[in-house]
Length: 220
Image 1 (cartoon, one colour):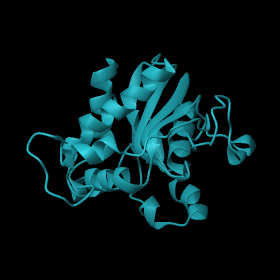
Image 2 (image 1 turned 90 degrees about the horizontal axis):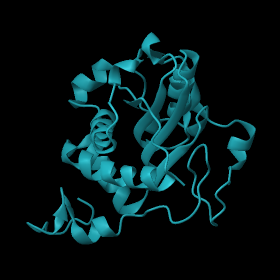
Image 3 (image 1 turned 180 degrees about the horizontal axis):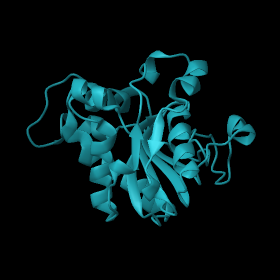
């Protein structure tokens, strides 16, 4: 899937050969606490310029890698080409960065929801598959029902950065059962952070005690 070459029978991860999987672009140094934007040094307290002005309403956001090259191609296959068998290998990457952070104090893992009309068209919500696999790995219950998407929106990936926040405004609804819960919000990719912002904001508005976010990849 990543290089277009012949896929070995044994030395592979799902539909990605071992060489390409080993070369997935991990974020090598520090990242913004709130949006996970990669930074060029090892400052653990780094906060990017936009987040200094208007941080995402989360304790932190973690991302394993950069949305580029082979990781971008793997995630595109996971999301759009029914390569749902990538859920557990990608969850393993996210588990790795969460354990490095040392913060697993959550009551529930909640995927970024997809509107039911889009689930019918695509056949699955890749964020939910990822969240379920991650929840199993870190022994925290996955509870997709705690957050729902109320409108079938234009795809964020097809919109200009400036239009993404407006597109997801008031598009999510949290269950009253989130009250006082510590929530780990999970998605595959963070681009501008507009979707995570909208989801986390709704969870907090509904009474969540704490929200943090984890994604496989962050755009640079």
